[in-house]
Image 1 (tube, one colour):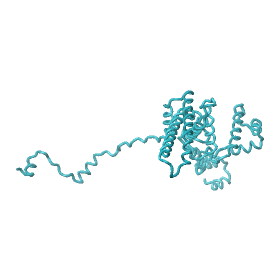
Image 2 (tube, helix red, strand yellow):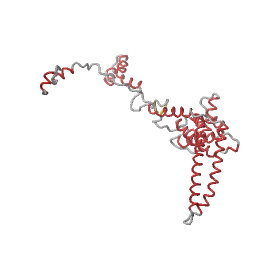
Image 3 (cartoon, one colour):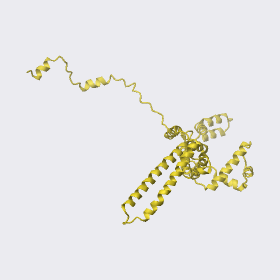
Image 4 (cartoon, one colour):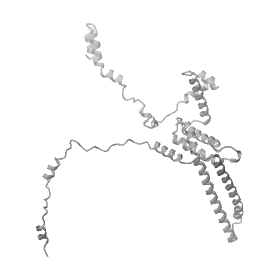
Length: 318
């Protein structure tokens, strides 16, 4: 049996010695540091709010629309199931009144059975209402787009409109012969208007003042479309039917207080990016201030040679 030393002597492989520090330093000079590796590209910052809105719109676009007959069938089923729940609650109340220690076992079984039926029917009602709400989400988006530019983002307007849609679904009566979309539009508009009144302004105004301001704005737009560039208070008062004093007082509160962090131009810039800095001079003033000595020298040289010329030059820094 050969030893390990004999086996190593018999091999033809060449073992390289451990490199020294000098060899490592010499190898490092072979690296070209004049052309450093390119840094990874910096991708532009994406707007997550717009991405979420696109995803939401694409998701509701896949939901099939409901016809009038489909909505009628769903509301008819909901009405029948609500009637069934009312029928189950009547004997359940009687059993609850008899709920004492002497209650026999079959009474307990009947109570549990009725409660289970009510839970099943309630879940089916919830599924049917969800189907109606999902089929009308596009209506909420369509109405919310009309209220853009009034202090709330489109995503907030859609959310408030969906809240109104949910209220309309729970209060709609199909027996009146009105189409659900017509009924739900009013609730969606009311929810959006209330949200704009509550959160559209930094300083909240009462609802009746907000309605008067909206009337005043419509009157001004009417005059602008008629060809009057800057309508005066008496013209606005004549069109709106309000007094001149009231119009002037309302015009003082019409400008809204805007947060400096409010996004503008499709969320690329913010309000404070458009506000000029008071700590720096404008370019023209800065240029005049920088070259004022040169300008003064030119003016002094154009003066006639008089005794006051020397004193003027000393005073103005020639």
